[in-house]
Amino acid sequence: MKKERIIYLDVLRVIACFMVVLTHAGDSYILQTESSSIYLALIRPCVPLFILLSGILLLPVNLEYGSFIKRRFTRVLIPFLVWSILYVFMPVPSKLMFGGPENFLTGSDMNIYLYNIMLIPINFTKSNAHFWFIYTILGLYLFLPIISPWIKTASKSTLIVFLSLWTFTLFLPYIKLYFPEFQGECDWNEFGMFHYFSGYLGFIILGYFLHHYNKLSLLASMTIGTILFIVGFVITYYGFLADINKFNTLKEISGVENWKLLELFIGYNTINVALMTAGIFMFFQKIDYSKFVTNCFTELSIFSYGIFLVHYILVLWLGKAIAHQTSLCPVFEQMLLTVVTFVLSYLIVKTISYVPKSKYLIG
Image 1 (cartoon, rainbow, N blue to C red):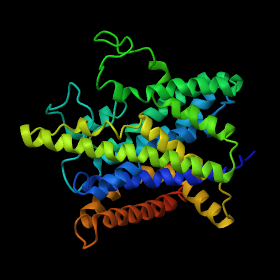
Image 2: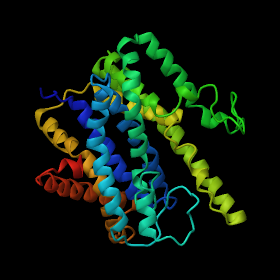
Image 3: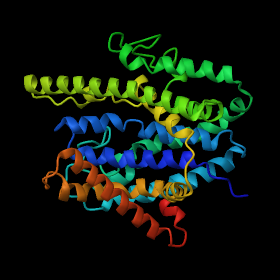
């Protein structure tokens, strides 16, 4: 039987996808204007939203473990591998791209194409760095059938206990500024007391909880959602500006560009980003969408994974053509680049969808 679509999930998936494109369109503007900092703060819920939606759509898992993994990996893994290989050989406007984590081969004289292809099963590389969170998604898929029996029997209060412990872990990035090794962590043990309640799994449970237990009215849900989003945004934005000042100060004093300094307040597993994610979810959850809006977002949602897969090469080339080349304010220029990229990506993916076996290319 064909599964009935849940329109607000389609809306949120499209919003999350657009946010991802906006994120990458901002690579040409980061640190250059206050406007780009506003965008960067606004769009932090993009990855958590994708993960949160997975918890709603996939839990509880009603398939045998192997069947579930085969079905999900076919839809996500195969297109991911195909496009990861394609990105290795795609021409880019510059040789320098932000790269993946270092390893024992970093800086070696190995052929760069061979190196990037070989590393795909291990980690993202310079050619497919924008696919970093697909590895996380695949890991969560492996875990979903394991927690599914618990989800089926867990009461509302049990879910609240888990989410309360997870919420505490969202403060750990800030606690660790003062206590770098916390609750049993040390040189020989990186798994502290709350390790198993932390990370992206919390967004999976949060999505399931909000979908099933948010019984608020439209007005109440939108109001609370707005408040959560604003509080999270303010913390994220002003925290990020403070981190930029630290980054620039260190650069002026020592000439060192420590990019890790910029990751604290915009980290996905932080309380402020979680507030924004829950807020945007609750805001759109209860809206009664018109048939026209439903049709538009359903169409875009169906192709959202494909849009994600193809958009980055367009961002690189269109960014070179548009960024700082118009008389527009950077905030409008970045949005123009995002909209053009998003529309072209959709048209490309829509065209590919008519090709036989296209699910192996665009999911």
